[in-house]
Image (cartoon, rainbow, N blue to C red; front, side):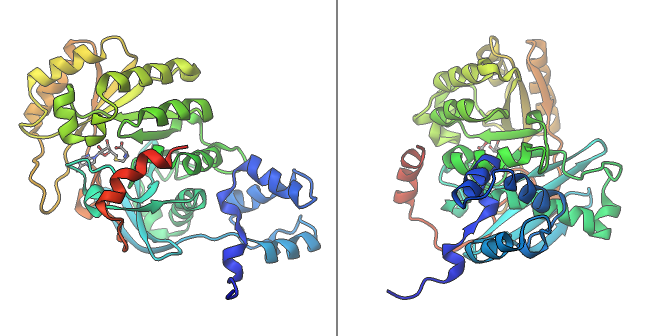
Length: 380
Ligand code: SAH
């Protein structure tokens, strides 16, 4: 057998949340509290070499050096929008690239992160879908996006000057899994990374400030409710199955009634937070008053808020963004029917960082037939 390079056999400890790290240390014959020390070095002191972790014993550091690693992907480019939004292109170890976006506001800094290289779901209006699907990100690649962005925002003077949120002690106050990919089709890795984001020894975010957005994978929503408490956003985009199946093909498998039932279950599972329904505004497709009324009818008995997203066009796409008047009328109609609604302000458009414009860059795309069969089988 050819020799296996050491990097491949050593464990990337960025993939492990606190309990997994504790088990790792125990399996080495070490005390579980080593996990706490390691997390603080990595996420609070930004030390990623074992040799610099001075409160670990010398023999342990040497052993970690030979058996484990801390592998961060690499930022290959950074673009800054006139509105302060920042987009990073991040290269993974296998050469695939993903995108991560930072959206600053005076009272918060939201990081939009990716969960997969590409996406398998084929929503007809989304730029990521056009790229096809390549693979799931591992937990280390997911949490690394938060680590790399926080680092860049703290250390880059030019970025600091641009931020309207300079007063914030930590630049990243909120994380949304709304970048490339369908997070519920990569549930285990996403949950490990979200647990790290919420761990007091790393980023310490409150669960209300971590939002997972899904195209509506019903078994995934139920599985998430059992594993981890975070805010849930669901990409609804249409008030009836006929239209929704055209926009989000996953609807064929999990139609609206099933989806809304799983959202009710999620809200009732002790989460006590309104589910957000995202609704992309597509001119003459899903944006007339009739659609608004139908939507209000659907949502009458569910604790939720609707987030209207003006469509972000990109080259080659035939859909158009609904005009501001139409969006205002749609929103007014929902409000009249007592649905809580906000319209998302489009950010970072000049750097293709707005919703649905993230495409990354990767090779070796899975064939369509494979892609279509993958999502169901990947969810455990
Ligand atoms: N797969 C997940 C998360 C990624 S997409 C999901 O579907 O929710 C994040 C949000 O951006 C989704 O609501 C998605 O429907 C929306 N979106 C995708 N393309 C868009 C575009 N071109 N303009 C505006 N919103 C878009």
